Image 1 (cartoon, protein in one colour):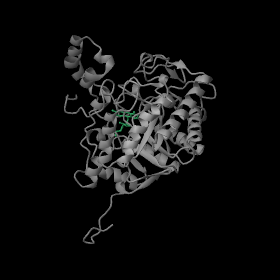
Image 2 (cartoon, protein in one colour):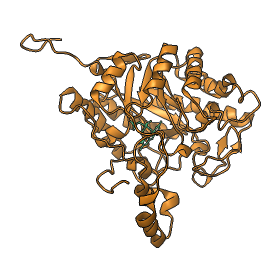
Image 3 (cartoon, helix red, strand yellow):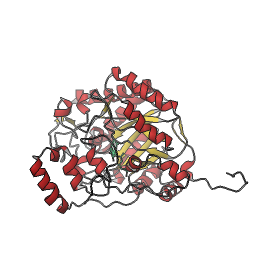
Image 4 (cartoon, helix red, strand yellow):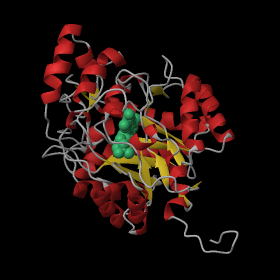
Length: 412
Ligand SMILES: Cc1cc2nc3c(=O)[nH]c(=O)nc-3n(C[C@H](O)[C@H](O)[C@H](O)COP(=O)(O)O)c2cc1C
C-alpha cells in the first residue's frame, strides 16, 4: 500500500481482512466473549449493553462475540444478569440490539451456552445438569447425571437458540464448548465418567458436541457462520490437554458444520487458569458471593488480615498462553483458528498470525479496559494493551456489571 506521497506503507497483518465462513471481517482482532452482566432481569439485552458494544465498534474491532447467552433455564449462569436466548419472546429484544449494531457498521456473533454444573440451582430453579453426578470444585453443588432425554433436550435447545439468533439478525453463533460449562464437561475425561455412548473414548465424549453442531447447522442453514470455543487445557491430571484438543478439533471439522474454532483453557474450579494473571484475593472478598455473604466484621478481618497472605499456585501469565496449543490445532485442521488468552502486544499478535499459529486473535480483559485498542494499534498510539491482568473484572462479574476495576482496589 502507498501513502499520498507514494511512499510504501507496511500494512500490519492484523488489519488485513479475513473470512469466517460466509462472514468477511475487516481485521483479525475479535472481542472474545465476556459476560457483561448488563441484561435485564429476564435476560433481555439492554440499551446499556448496546452502548458497551458500541465502544468496541468505534474502537475498530473486527467482530464482537457476546458474553454467553443461556439456551435454557437449567443452564442459566449464576453470574450477574446473564443474557438469555431461551424463548422466542426474546427475539425482538435481541433484534433491537443487533439492528443498532449493524446501523453503526458492527458485526456481532451470539455466544450460546448451557452452564451445566457451574451454576447453582437457586439461580436456575432446576437441578443442575452434567454428564456425571460430580460437583464442580468451585460451585460445590452435585448435578444430576443427564439421561438420554436430558441430552436430547439440550441438543434441541442449542439448535433452537441458534435459530433465534439467526432470526434476530446476529452475524453468527458461537457454541460454548469451553471453560467447564456443560459441553466442556462432556468433552473432558475429568468430568465425564460415563460408560455409555456419551462417555469413554474421545469419539463418545465428543458425541453431544457433534450432535449440537449438526442440529444447529440444520436449523441455520449452510451459509450461516457457526463457531465453537474449546479448551486446550484444564488444570487436572485427567483433564483436557492440547493433544486431546487436536483430536476434538479434527472431529469438529469432520462434522462439516462449523466455520471456526476459538481456543481457550481452564474451568471455574481451576481458578485463574482461563484468565491468567493475578490471584486477586482482596477483590474476591469484595465481589465474590460466597465470600461477600460473610458477616461484615468477618469480611473485614479476612480482607485485611488473611487475604494479603493467601498464595495459591497457578500457571503463570505469559503472553498468548494458548498459542502453542493453537498452533498444534491449526496444523491439524483447515478451519480458521482464533486464539484467546493473554494477547497483549501488537507485535506478538502479528507474529502469531504471520507464523501461521492462528488466523485471528481475540481479547477479553484488554478490551474491557481499552475498547479502542485496535484503533490505538492501527494509529500507532500504543504497541501494547494497558491491561495488567489483575482479574478484578473476572471476580466482579459474579455480582456486578462488566468494567475495568483496576484502579479501585489494589491486588496482592
Ligand atoms: C469478565 C469476563 C467474563 C468472561 N465471560 C466469558 C463468557 O461469557 N464466555 C466465554 O467463552 N469466555 C468468557 N470469558 C473468558 C474470555 O473470553 C477469555 O477466554 C479469557 O479472559 C482470556 O483472555 P484475555 O487474556 O484476553 O482476557 C470471560 C472473561 C472475563 C475477563
